[in-house]
Image (cartoon, rainbow, N blue to C red; front, side, top):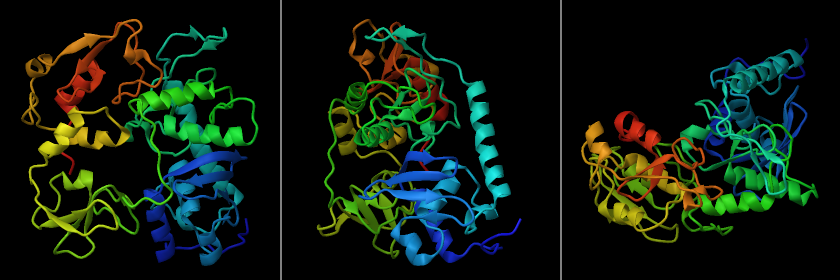
Length: 393
C-alpha cells in the first residue's frame, strides 16, 4: 500500500522532544470522531485541538503547523491512548496507512475486551431517587486507565467516580467534570459516559462527589499562577512544569526537583535552594537525607483535610509518630485504631472513597485510621503497610 509520506527509520530530535512533552502533559479526550479522530483539551490551554490519525496525521495546534512534524498531541494519542511502546517505529511516523491503523485499533479493542471479561461488579444494584437502577462500580484492575486523560487509575490514586446507569467503569472525577462541562456547553440533555455512551449520572451528583473527594473544598486556579514554574522540569519524576515549591541544586546547572522528590533521598550530595513563586528570590534550604518528611509537613497533614496532592507525601511517610521503622509487623499495625462504616455516616457521602483501591465505602466495612487521621479500607491499608510502601527512589 503506497504511503503519502516517506517511512522514517529513526526518530528525530523534534519527535523525541514532543514525546517527552506528551509524557508530562495532562490532556483530556473531550470527543472521539470515529476511531481515529479526537477533540483534545490540554490543561492550562484555552483552545481545544482536533487530531486525526491517518496518512498523514494532522492536528490543529500551532506547533504542528509550524514544525510540519508530529506534535505532542499526536504523540500523546499514540503513546497513551493506544499504548504503543516508544521504541515502536509507528510512534514517530508522519502517518500510518490503513493496515497499520487497523493493527493499532485491534490492539486497543482486544485490550478493552480482556479488561471487561476480567472485571467483576463491586457493589450490588440499588435504586436511584427517580426509581432507576444504579449499577455497581466495577473492580479496578492494575492496567485500567481513565478514558479521558489516559493515566492509569491505580498509579496516581486520584479520586474516581463511575458510570452508574451503564457500564460501571471508573473515571477520574476531575476528568469527568471537564467532560461533562463540555457536553453541557453543547446543549446535551444528560451527561454521557465516555466509554459506553449511556447516561453517566446527574451533573449535580458529580459536583458533590468532587467536593467530598477534595475534603469539602473546591479548588480555584488563576489563569496565571506564580507558583507554576514555567520552563522547569523535575529531574526525578519529570513533572513539567513544577508547581508549588521548586528546588534547584546550587552546584549542578538546571537540576530541579519538585517538593515530593526533594523529600526523597535523591541527589543528596549537593545543597539546594528553593522558591515558592516565580517572582520570589531563591533561598537556601536545609535537607534531610533519609527520605522522611519534614516535621512541618507532617504537622500540616495532620491538621487539615486531605487533598489530591497529599498522596505523594503519604507514600513517603515511612516513619511518623506511631508508625516508625521500615519493617512493620502485623501486631504493630493491629494497634492502629479501626472503625466500622455505619449507616448515615460521613464516609458514605458521594465521592468519599478509599484512596488505595479507589472504591466507595459500604455499610459494615472495617476502616483503619492512621496517625495522620486519614482513613482507608482496613484490608487495603494493612496490605500497603506490610508489603507495598517503600521510599520513593
